[in-house]
Structure formats: structure tokens, C-alpha cells
Image 1: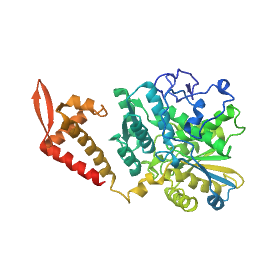
Image 2: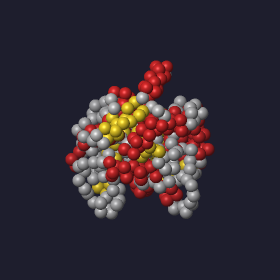
Image 3: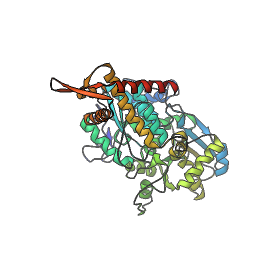
Image 4: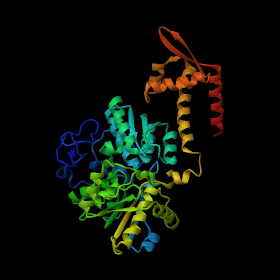
Amino acid sequence: MQCVRCGRRIDANGPPVAKCPECGGILEYAINVEKIRGTKFTGEFTFWRYRSLLPEVKNIASMREGGTPLYKASHLSEEFRVKDLYLKDETRNPTNSFRDRSAALLVSNILDLKMKAAVCATNGNMGAALAAYSARYEINCHVIVPRMVDMGKLAQMLVYDATIEEYGETVDEAIKRAEILAEETGWYQATPELNPLVIEAQKTIAFEVAEQFGVPDWFIVSMGSGGIAYSIWKGFRELYELDVIDSLPKILGVQAEGCSPIVNTYLKSEKHIEKPFTHAIGILVANPLQKELALKAINDSGGSAIAVSDQKIFAAEQSMARLEGIFAEPASSGTIAALGKAREESLISSDESVICLITGSGLKATDVLQALSKRRKSAMLGAELSTKEKILRLLSSKDRYGYELWKDLGKIMTRPAIYQHLNDLLNKGLVTYYIEDGKKYFRITERGRDVLEAIDKVKILL
């Protein structure tokens, strides 16, 4: 591993580390060019086709991620008057977003380290992906979400049985909470901004595009924390260093006007928004931890950065669906809105080739799903009821004391949280307790058994 800022190198063994111990800069994995020059990509067209250019893992966690299609957007090309426009459609991954690539590599690393629990701060896609892969490979998944999170992504986390904790208004605060939790519990740190393996996983998008198309003149990417813009640049740069390609694309980074800290820094703008907000929740990040990386990708590539309005983003979302048959989340649709603005400002010329990254499905987005389902509070209530149901089922087999319940639940929440659930169940008459050998044992009541029976009947109807 090597520091992007000071160049210091450190051993890459053990759990990934995000910050340089010398200067506090961001650490990234560096390839040994001479050692792997001449590497040929073989095997199926999936994420693991590029294993030779990824940090070494012994276990392979996979749900057939990667190998996503690259569509020629003929109708949008005509609308924006550009010669070649392609859409890299990451909605075709197992949980419908680009984050499945990261989840595959992170869970592989977790299996190598023989760890049993992971924590992740997320405003959506990463939590959904990690929850799915953790479920498949029997890892306890603890997700920290801010108050603002897309309903569809939250629903995925719930159905994959992740433990969900709400913390803060935006993902910035949730990240701080995840950092503290990982230090206190020893859980694996799976937050994208705090784990450099995420950049490595995401760079495979560039590898695939190089095989599917070659090198475009422009690669347009939406930016939240900034990591995906750097991932794409790093992927192409490594192929260039290995003599696989002979040119590099310009990176165009996109943010929403209501929350555009990276764009403002790039433009040297003194514009300050007191309370940043955008309906494109996937890129709602007030203090992006990977801003330095995003700016490096933009500047080193000779690219640019653009902010677009929510109105333009939603118009682009509808245009993409209507003209190309792809339903993308607002954060992804920002790339199409940015292309329109870049053409208006003559930043991109008509004879240049452009690829827009479509990171996630529109079915995950709040603006659509709020009209189809109950509000978010109902989903959070479902998570709470799920924990209470688990406690009742454990007690239905035998009496247990609090610490024993905590262990049997997989230590995926704090002990005080367990006792809070037990107090709620006591107050509702679903459990009772007795003291034996100085320990407080809990026992399910007949009313509690009736509730479990009712739950089972409802599940049959669903």
C-alpha cells in the first residue's frame, strides 16, 4: 500500500487501513508493474476475470457480479448530438448497483481474515450489497444509515437481515459512528471511504469498458465521496502503465447543485451552502473524505467537474428510461444531465466519444418508491420487530439470561440494546423473568407464544 499524498509505502497484510500513519493521507494499493506486465485476462466476463490486478485473496465470494453490459445509446446520442455515447449499466449486478463489486472483494477479504462481523456506514447501495453478500457467506452485517436514505435500498438491507442503526442526518455522521464501532468491537470496517479495497474493486469497471469498447474521450461519473471517479481513473491508468491501452480518458465528475463540495473546490468557488441537500440521495455527502482522490482523477486526466440541478437530474432520469429503456437512480442520471450541460458549454464536442456510468437502479430510489410503499418509519419498525421476534424464538426453545441472548443473537448489537428489547417485551407481557443463581432468566409467556403463532400465520399469507 502507498500513500497518495506523501508516497510512503506500508505492508498490505491484515485488515485494510485507510489512512497513512505518517501524514494522514489516503492509502491505496499499488501494483507491481514489472511483475504483472503482459498479464492476460482469461475466464468468464465477470468481476473475477481481473483477479490478477486485484489485491490477493484466497477465498472467492461471488454472486456473479461484474460483466455488466455497455449499451450504445443511439437515441440520446441524437438528442445531445454526440457521435458515440455509451451507458455502462451497473444496475445488472446482483443487488442492482456497482457496489456489488466492492462487496465481493470485501467479503472475500473477511473470509480470509476469518472474521465474523462487518460494519458499514452507507447512504444506500453499499449497505444493500454488503448485506446480501454477508447473508450468503454467514457474516453478521451491521449497517449504519443516516436519516436520509432511499427506501428501496433500506428495504434490501432489511430483507437480507442486516442489523440497521440510524445515526445522523447525512452519511458523513454515520461514517464517524462506523469508525468508532469498528474500533470498539473489532468488527471488519466495510465503509467505502474507510476501506481501500473498495477502490480496487470498482476499478474493474474501467477494465471491462476497455475490453468492451476501448478508451473513450470522456468518462462521466457522479460523485458523492469521490471514490468512484478515482476508481475509474485508476483502472485506466493501470492498463496504460501495463501497455494494455495507449491512451487515457478525461474524467468528468458530476454533483448536484445542492451538494457540490468537490465541484466547488475544483472551480475554486467560495459558494457555501448552509445545509447541503439533493434528492439524489446516493450522492448527498457534505464532507467527502475522498475529495482529494476525485480531484486528482479530474486534474490528472485533464477532465472537469460540473454541478447540475435536481430538476435536470430528474428530467435526465425520465429521458434515459423513455429513450434507452434504462431506469436509473437519480445519482446515476446526473451523468446524463451533466452531458447535456457539457455540450451546451462546448466542453464536450460532437465528434468525441462518451461513456456515462449508470451506478444503480431507479427502483432503489426514494422519489419512486415512496409513492409505492409506506414511509421509512415503517421499515425501521420492521427491523425492530424482527429483533424482538428473534428473541421470542430463542426463548421459545429454552429460558435464557441477557448475556446468553446477546451471544445467541450473534453479538450484532450492544447488550444495552438487547435489554431494551427485553424491557419492551416485559411491558407487553410477552416474556417474564425469574432469578436463579444470581442471574436474571427470561421466559416466554403464553401470550408471547400466541404472538409467534400469529406471525407464522401472516408469513404464510405473504
